[in-house]
Length: 436
Image (cartoon, rainbow, N blue to C red; front, side, top):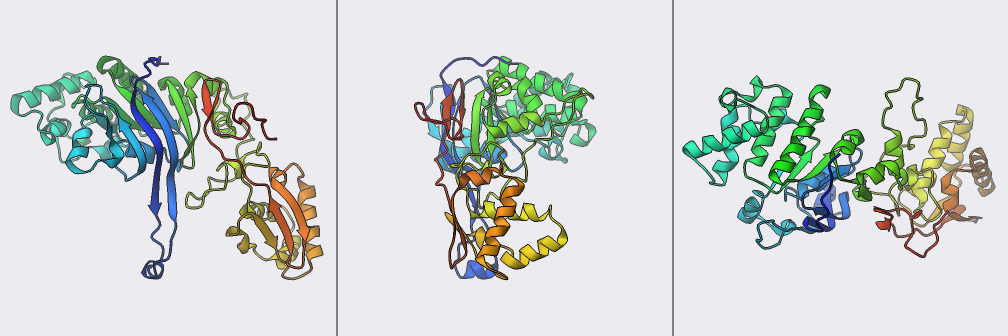
């Protein structure tokens, strides 16, 4: 595992970064000017990237890690700030505010290695042209100097002798050789930071370790700083100094790699680690993985975004009416068809709960409020340990229906916990009691 230099010298500082994409909606909705909603791909991320370190962004598909990495290069519009502190002493710049020529110039210091080397290389360009293209675009070299720098970059990444590769096209190379060419193109401008987006996920298992070792060697030789984006915790453990765990657009835990693996704090981090396959055939497969799927980023859960799937969720994690609807729907998957039909006729599809906040009112549609209350008594008896019940402050039968009042949610921010930071109500501010 690499050793992070304790420099206290951030090369990038990300503050309150938000990346929201507007949903298109129907033509009529756009014509009438109705709000069609937004997808909160990144929703308030704060982190520092120390010079010379390897920072891993880890999470499931849809967690926002790739979008965050692209924002660091100015490839997607963002609010908040991404301050770049160049190592050459030039002024600090907010990448989020750059456009046009200024942004293109800044990208000479910040480069990206994309996930798919097959798509990253133009099939009509030979390797000499493709690797040297950044030098041509930024008017850094031409003629014999251009070729010499391309040769040097290719040999540095292990494509040697370079003369055997200059005239070849991407289709003539293996997957590992293509990724080496992509890395050569990324380093040819002598950048400070490389954003590596799943750089080995498209490669055969036999070459993944070699590419990662190459990147570590280049880090030492060229003084590079990496942001390593991956869903693979096994490679993150090998490659990264620090790991930031992302879930639904937010960093829920960040800390030294050894600490994250040895003492994971956030329930989501714990779930990810339990999901790592064990090569021992006698080890049983983990059965306590998070229930359900990642929620819709256009309507993230209230409070902690992970609480609907979390087995350790507390009363103040952010329970809301749609959680109650999900609980009823899960209950219906386990009961006989006749019981489902009776209960569905009693309360309907509970569609109103999707858009209500703070309190849920379940109105009887084919019976009485007492029948609704009896139904929820049965559901609660089935699984009294269900975390949602901790968040129900009161249940009251009224003429309107059965009214559920939910406990207000706590603000969930990254807070120090030992050498790590974690966003979870189980780790409250210093001096405050943890919720249960």
